[in-house]
Length: 278
Image (cartoon, rainbow, N blue to C red; front, side, top):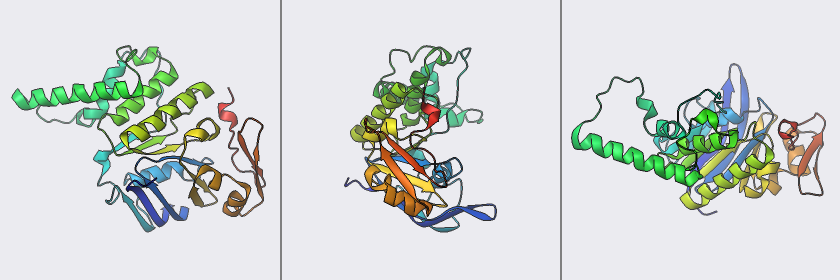
């Protein structure tokens, strides 16, 4: 990839309380790259996204986001937090959920609604952006239905559309595949890759199981033992690299169908996670 850097961390350290969550982390994500962020619960995956958004300060090192300090470019970032579930009784339409990505930050704020030409232009722009995002994720067939009545995979497409509605340059997705079956995980990964390529958007996707998305990735950022390694999937998910990261013997096995399984002592998170063995 030869795109401009979207996220750059250099010798970064982040602390919560008295101890570091991770330290000496250096990585670069470029425009048009699709990276998975992997590691056990508590290893610092979501913390990385929060640092990029400027919600948590670094204790050492540096991070730049779209060429600016963390938080300064948040208007150009699409963010999908850890999965929100919608009850079957939820009557809000999918299209309205997507619209929240455009102007949801105004909810509850006592600002006057624009009137006249300015108001009409803003409403027209919102309709255009919402329609564009829904088309991009292929959700047109169900976007006008109550979001509680559509499947989990369809809900996730609508939430990704919400994150895309402002035409971001960087997309941060925190466990968007959680609780989806294997078919829907692959479908969502294919969608994200297509957005990455066609829109030249840099993507960081936090996941527990890399196997359903392995064929779509450009990079892997793997957190463990207070540090992280960054590289192509095959550069990172191998016995030598993970053994160095964990400072313990780790073996990466490849099954006959191409799936990867990580085993070792102390036991690391299995790359083929039982969470998604539906």
